[in-house]
Every structure is written in C-alpha cells, then in structure tokens.
Amino acid sequence: MVGDFFKRLTNGIVFLLAALTFFLVPIGRKTAAQHLVAIVSTPPAKEAASAFAHIARRITAEARSELDKLRNPPPAPREPKPPKARPPS
Image (cartoon, rainbow, N blue to C red; front, side):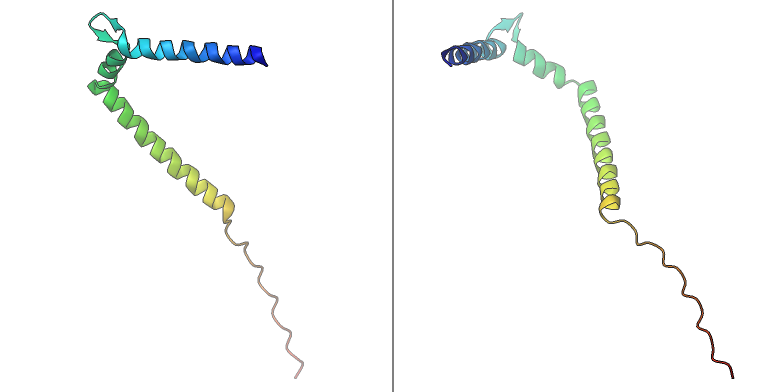
C-alpha cells in the first residue's frame, strides 16, 4: 500500500517535470510546445485536418443511418389474403 503511494507520487512528479519541460525548455529558439504549434498551423496540416473532419462527418452519418435501419427495420411484407369463396347461387 505504501509502495503504491510512492509509485504514484513518483509517476506524478515525473509527469509534472515532463510537462514543464515541454512548455518551458527551449529546443533551439522555441520550446517543444511552440514547435508543435508551428507544425500544426501549416497549410498542409490544416488541409489534412479539414479532410479528416470531412471523412469523420461522412462516416458518422453512414453509421447513424445503419443504426437507424437496425433500430427501425422496415415492416415485413404482408401476404395477400386469399379471395373469399362466394356462396353457390
């Protein structure tokens, strides 16, 4: 139990140091966070994000229509009733 506490505490400290490093320590002229922002803000990255969003919307619409079909199946076709026999005249 005490070992788990120290393990979690150590993991938390390592995560905090990694986050601080990501945002505060420069790599060249920029921090890692600034490099990431610069990469993501390029026109090809924006185009890729737009295409991904378009595909995700299309897949979502197709999935919804398939789920609607499963939830509300079309009514079964009714068999025609046999004609009534006429009484002999």
